[in-house]
Amino acid sequence: MKRIIFAWLVCTVQLAALNASSQTKTVATKKTESPDKTETLTNKNIIDLTTIGLEENVIITKIGSSASKFDVSTDALVALKMAGVSGPVIKAMIDKQSGKVVEAKPVAPAINAATAVAPVETGALEMM
Image (cartoon, rainbow, N blue to C red):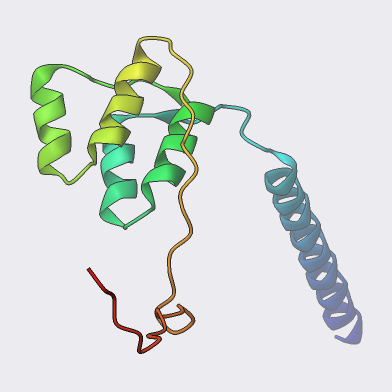
C-alpha cells in the first residue's frame, strides 16, 4: 500500500511540475511576442482623444507622428465638429490625409493665478 501511495505522490508531483513548466513557457512566449503592427488613427480615435480632454497640440502631434486613415468627407467633418473636435485638429487631419507634414504649434504656458503678478499702482495721477 505504501508503494502505491508513493507512486501516486510521485506521479502527482511530476504532473504538477510539467503543468507549471508549460504555463511558464506560455507566459514567456506571450511576453516576448510584441505586435509589430503600427496603429492607424481614424476619426473615431480623434473623437476619443478629444472626448477625454487631451490637449489640442498633443492630438495634432499624434496625428503628425502616426499612420492615419481619416474620413475627411463633408459629412465626416460635420460629425467631427459636432463631437467637439477643434478646427485646428480637423485641419491637421485634412492636411495629413492630403500628404502634408503636420506639426503642432507651441502652446503658450498657462498663467497660474496664484503666482501671477498684478500691476502695482503708484498713486500718481496722469495729466492729460
